[in-house]
Image 1 (cartoon, rainbow, N blue to C red):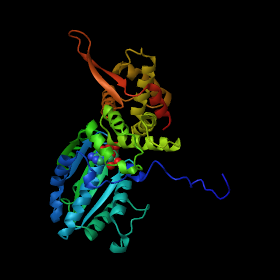
Image 2: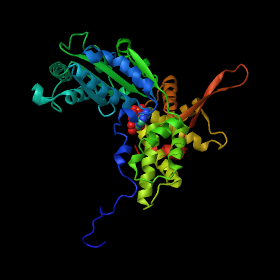
Image 3: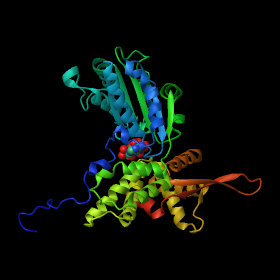
Image 4: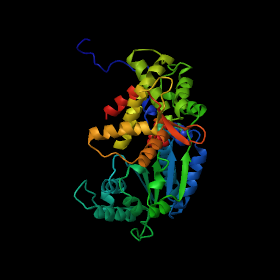
Length: 398
Ligand SMILES: Nc1ncnc2c1ncn2[C@@H]1O[C@H](COP(=O)(O)OP(=O)(O)OP(=O)(O)O)[C@@H](O)[C@H]1O
């Protein structure tokens, strides 16, 4: 390279607007595919807010990449602009509960998202206040700035303490808010989440529950087609989008996975100086995506779920190739050994069964009920979806 050339001089032949393939990119309504019923239901649940009245609290369930966050963000944006036409002001706070898992962190983040110090004169310092004081300032911010606050709690099951759900869901009836009102949208991919809530929170928080189903290959294809302009004209070979859609549909119809594979395929083509994105790039991208996805998914699991996964992976490595399924009792005995090595107490078998079902719901493992023979009842066997080496690598990289 000569002295005046820059490392950044090379033009990008593959991507035209890569941001369209970023997961955080908020697509316009007409680019939201196959979620009309879900958007209608959400609109129905929130519609009282357009007149400044209290909306229903909502819980949304569904596997990863089924559009839960996208639809929640889109519908609240739409709600805000419709309400503005009636002179009703809506404040929306989006909180990733994985990042803000304690009550204090979550309430502080909500208050900071909704506040505008220049308008309210209220400061929300990053530290130094009691939890009660953060709540008091949040109520003042809401009363001072908005008619209605909508609080989106993504991955709500990661919040360590129900108290915040109790406080928020009852803020109006307990008289904490005087001028304004409040609605919550809780998002979770843990289907049993509601069972874990205490009765009072459960009854007030889950006024409306919705389950977002996985996408089929046609819907995934349409989702990808609508982002085709992320690439330069003519760069994507015709078979690329159908192949990516088929790969993502095979597990559970995950749009996040589809978009990630397409982006990685473009990046791999770019890294190799290729002029087009081919099926071979897609195959390589699939491997890259699986490693990253698994590591991310496993990193979000509680410590004992990780130990159970490792136990299942060790058992799978020892199992015959033609019969890789492992009964709960075998996983449990290896898990007990791992707990001992870690110096932690093993959970009871009942809780272990629950954690295993959650891993199955997330498609990290698969479960099957199997009869033991006539009159002997049935037991559950478990299989990893990915190969055990990949799972162990993902558990270790965390
Ligand atoms: N119906 C859709 N049309 C267009 N893009 C979509 C659709 N559904 C999801 N996407 C895109 O797929 C990605 C993942 O979607 P989103 O984050 O909403 O899923 P999620 O169900 O909230 O997943 P998670 O539980 O993992 O957070 C985002 O980039 C989103 O824009």
